[in-house]
View 1 (cartoon, rainbow, N blue to C red):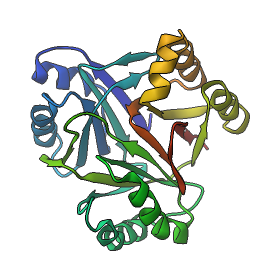
View 2: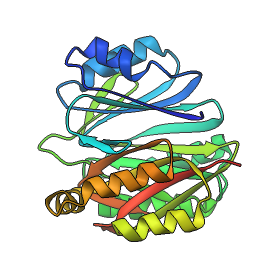
View 3: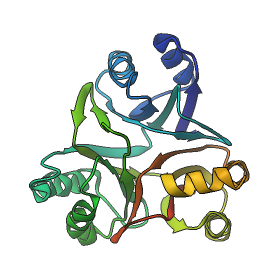
View 4: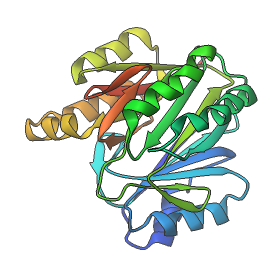
Length: 263
């Protein structure tokens, strides 16, 4: 399996990390989702256990197969069939264009191509300017952008053991075997779209917005949506954000998915 997803609800952080990473082999990049209170501790343990690997952590409600949770730990590991280059997005509220040279270098490093590369991005704000800024570079490589703005009174991001506020990160992800597609739509439309255009997805990463997540929950549609996603692919994970980002569209309330297709 080229993407391994693990979860733990154990209150002991060391035990939770061991449980969530039990099946990881040959990782090239690790993304984890946890609470703000656990972010630093989880990051420290993961960076000690996986030296030399890019590790990014964010906070929020996460999806694991057909479940959703706002506590515990979700770990997503990409193996060595991926080429991945990550970068810190600083100067988020003052001069985000300063990140473009780093992004351009990352795209060149992985040998980005339209059908097998995506740019995953999460930030703590200013997403309207940031989306437009990043797309000016991504469009030159015809690589799609997806991500979201983290919500909370104090959104935090961990990059390789360091905690950042009022910042963001990007990960240029290229699969060497298969394709990476992204889709955007309403819950049922999105499910039908993936079924129609993605034969036997190996992995689906869902980025939902807080409004739609709460709407589905209140109307008893969230469990059905997550079960449907897990029914399409054996490996499903995701996160709830404030606003979703998709290609060059201004951040909105649509649901976005990255889909790994085996070849």
